Amino acid sequence: MINKKSTLSLLALLLLTACSTNKNQKIDTDHKHAVEAHALNHESNLEEEFIQNVGNTVHFAYDKDDLNHDAKTTLHKQAEWLKKNHDVKVMIEGHCDKRGTIDYNLALGERRANSAKKYLISLGVEKDRIETTSYGKERPIALGDSQEDLTQNRRAVTVFTDNIKEQY
Image 1 (cartoon, one colour):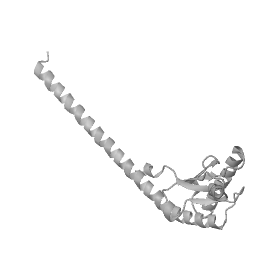
Image 2: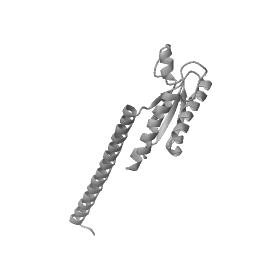
Image 3: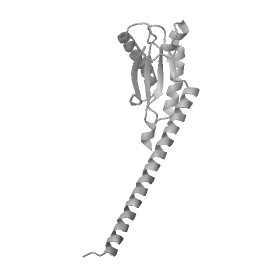
Image 4: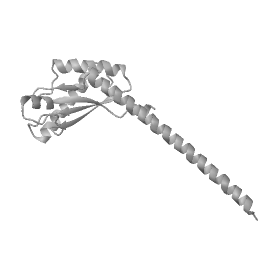
Protein backbone atom coordinates (compact mmCIF):
# COMPACT_ATOMS: atom_id res chain seq x y z
CA MET A 1 0.00 0.00 0.00
CA ILE A 2 1.15 3.54 -0.78
CA ASN A 3 1.82 5.62 2.28
CA LYS A 4 0.88 9.25 2.83
CA LYS A 5 4.40 10.48 2.16
CA SER A 6 4.55 8.81 -1.26
CA THR A 7 1.09 10.07 -2.16
CA LEU A 8 2.01 13.64 -1.20
CA SER A 9 5.26 13.41 -3.19
CA LEU A 10 3.39 12.15 -6.24
CA LEU A 11 0.79 14.93 -5.95
CA ALA A 12 3.50 17.58 -5.60
CA LEU A 13 5.27 16.24 -8.70
CA LEU A 14 2.01 16.30 -10.69
CA LEU A 15 1.29 19.85 -9.53
CA LEU A 16 4.76 21.08 -10.52
CA THR A 17 4.43 19.41 -13.93
CA ALA A 18 1.03 21.00 -14.48
CA CYS A 19 2.33 24.44 -13.46
CA SER A 20 5.33 24.08 -15.74
CA THR A 21 3.14 23.04 -18.68
CA ASN A 22 0.74 25.93 -18.08
CA LYS A 23 3.66 28.35 -17.81
CA ASN A 24 5.16 27.09 -21.10
CA GLN A 25 1.75 27.29 -22.78
CA LYS A 26 1.35 30.84 -21.50
CA ILE A 27 4.81 31.78 -22.81
CA ASP A 28 3.97 30.20 -26.20
CA THR A 29 0.63 32.04 -26.30
CA ASP A 30 2.23 35.34 -25.27
CA HIS A 31 4.91 34.90 -27.94
CA LYS A 32 2.28 34.13 -30.57
CA HIS A 33 0.30 37.25 -29.63
CA ALA A 34 3.44 39.38 -29.69
CA VAL A 35 4.38 38.09 -33.15
CA GLU A 36 0.84 38.70 -34.42
CA ALA A 37 0.83 42.23 -32.99
CA HIS A 38 4.21 42.93 -34.61
CA ALA A 39 2.95 41.63 -37.96
CA LEU A 40 -0.22 43.70 -37.77
CA ASN A 41 1.76 46.80 -36.86
CA HIS A 42 4.16 46.11 -39.74
CA GLU A 43 1.24 45.65 -42.15
CA SER A 44 -0.43 48.80 -40.83
CA ASN A 45 2.79 50.79 -41.34
CA LEU A 46 3.18 49.46 -44.87
CA GLU A 47 -0.42 50.28 -45.74
CA GLU A 48 -0.04 53.78 -44.29
CA GLU A 49 3.13 54.27 -46.36
CA PHE A 50 1.29 53.00 -49.44
CA ILE A 51 -1.66 55.37 -48.94
CA GLN A 52 0.48 58.44 -48.19
CA ASN A 53 3.30 57.96 -50.70
CA VAL A 54 1.62 56.11 -53.55
CA GLY A 55 -2.13 56.66 -53.31
CA ASN A 56 -4.77 53.99 -52.96
CA THR A 57 -7.67 55.56 -54.88
CA VAL A 58 -8.44 56.20 -58.53
CA HIS A 59 -11.56 57.99 -59.77
CA PHE A 60 -13.84 57.45 -62.73
CA ALA A 61 -16.13 59.57 -64.90
CA TYR A 62 -19.88 59.17 -64.55
CA ASP A 63 -21.08 55.76 -65.77
CA LYS A 64 -17.56 54.81 -66.95
CA ASP A 65 -15.04 52.14 -66.08
CA ASP A 66 -12.15 53.25 -68.29
CA LEU A 67 -9.00 54.64 -66.69
CA ASN A 68 -8.12 58.28 -67.26
CA HIS A 69 -4.57 59.68 -67.23
CA ASP A 70 -4.59 60.42 -63.48
CA ALA A 71 -5.86 56.93 -62.66
CA LYS A 72 -3.13 55.33 -64.80
CA THR A 73 -0.49 57.49 -63.11
CA THR A 74 -1.63 56.36 -59.65
CA LEU A 75 -1.89 52.72 -60.71
CA HIS A 76 1.62 52.91 -62.20
CA LYS A 77 2.92 54.07 -58.79
CA GLN A 78 0.96 51.27 -57.11
CA ALA A 79 2.47 48.69 -59.47
CA GLU A 80 6.02 49.89 -58.80
CA TRP A 81 5.42 49.79 -55.05
CA LEU A 82 3.78 46.34 -55.17
CA LYS A 83 6.66 44.93 -57.25
CA LYS A 84 9.07 46.06 -54.50
CA ASN A 85 6.84 44.61 -51.73
CA HIS A 86 6.21 41.07 -52.98
CA ASP A 87 4.51 39.88 -49.80
CA VAL A 88 1.63 42.33 -50.02
CA LYS A 89 -1.67 41.17 -51.50
CA VAL A 90 -4.43 43.63 -52.26
CA MET A 91 -8.15 43.87 -52.79
CA ILE A 92 -9.43 46.45 -55.26
CA GLU A 93 -12.84 47.72 -54.22
CA GLY A 94 -15.10 49.18 -56.92
CA HIS A 95 -17.48 51.98 -55.87
CA CYS A 96 -20.15 54.13 -57.53
CA ASP A 97 -22.10 57.27 -56.79
CA LYS A 98 -25.70 57.02 -55.62
CA ARG A 99 -27.33 57.30 -59.03
CA GLY A 100 -28.57 54.10 -60.67
CA THR A 101 -29.98 50.85 -59.32
CA ILE A 102 -28.23 48.65 -56.80
CA ASP A 103 -27.66 45.88 -59.37
CA TYR A 104 -26.39 48.26 -62.04
CA ASN A 105 -23.95 49.90 -59.64
CA LEU A 106 -22.66 46.57 -58.32
CA ALA A 107 -21.85 45.57 -61.91
CA LEU A 108 -20.26 48.95 -62.66
CA GLY A 109 -18.20 48.81 -59.46
CA GLU A 110 -16.96 45.34 -60.47
CA ARG A 111 -15.95 46.63 -63.92
CA ARG A 112 -14.08 49.52 -62.29
CA ALA A 113 -12.21 47.21 -59.94
CA ASN A 114 -11.36 44.87 -62.82
CA SER A 115 -10.09 47.78 -64.95
CA ALA A 116 -7.65 48.70 -62.18
CA LYS A 117 -6.66 45.05 -61.69
CA LYS A 118 -6.01 44.48 -65.41
CA TYR A 119 -3.87 47.59 -65.58
CA LEU A 120 -1.78 46.55 -62.56
CA ILE A 121 -1.27 43.11 -64.13
CA SER A 122 -0.23 44.73 -67.42
CA LEU A 123 2.44 46.60 -65.43
CA GLY A 124 3.88 43.38 -63.99
CA VAL A 125 2.00 42.75 -60.74
CA GLU A 126 1.17 39.05 -60.35
CA LYS A 127 -2.56 38.43 -60.80
CA ASP A 128 -2.74 36.05 -57.83
CA ARG A 129 -1.87 38.99 -55.54
CA ILE A 130 -4.94 41.00 -56.58
CA GLU A 131 -8.56 40.32 -55.74
CA THR A 132 -11.55 42.48 -56.61
CA THR A 133 -14.93 43.23 -55.11
CA SER A 134 -17.72 45.69 -55.72
CA TYR A 135 -19.68 47.69 -53.20
CA GLY A 136 -21.66 49.59 -55.82
CA LYS A 137 -23.21 52.60 -54.13
CA GLU A 138 -23.34 51.03 -50.66
CA ARG A 139 -20.16 52.60 -49.19
CA PRO A 140 -20.03 56.26 -50.14
CA ILE A 141 -17.29 58.45 -48.68
CA ALA A 142 -19.13 61.67 -49.50
CA LEU A 143 -22.78 61.90 -48.54
CA GLY A 144 -23.81 65.11 -50.31
CA ASP A 145 -25.41 65.72 -53.69
CA SER A 146 -22.81 68.03 -55.22
CA GLN A 147 -20.78 67.04 -58.27
CA GLU A 148 -17.69 66.91 -56.04
CA ASP A 149 -19.41 64.45 -53.70
CA LEU A 150 -20.59 62.28 -56.57
CA THR A 151 -17.11 62.33 -58.13
CA GLN A 152 -15.46 61.24 -54.87
CA ASN A 153 -17.74 58.19 -54.70
CA ARG A 154 -16.91 56.98 -58.25
CA ARG A 155 -13.69 55.21 -57.39
CA ALA A 156 -11.60 52.08 -57.08
CA VAL A 157 -9.72 51.71 -53.81
CA THR A 158 -6.74 49.41 -53.31
CA VAL A 159 -6.65 47.97 -49.79
CA PHE A 160 -4.36 45.43 -48.20
CA THR A 161 -5.68 41.95 -47.53
CA ASP A 162 -4.81 40.05 -44.38
CA ASN A 163 -1.65 38.39 -45.68
CA ILE A 164 1.49 39.66 -44.00
CA LYS A 165 0.90 38.14 -40.58
CA GLU A 166 0.71 34.67 -42.16
CA GLN A 167 4.47 34.88 -42.79
CA TYR A 168 5.41 35.08 -39.11
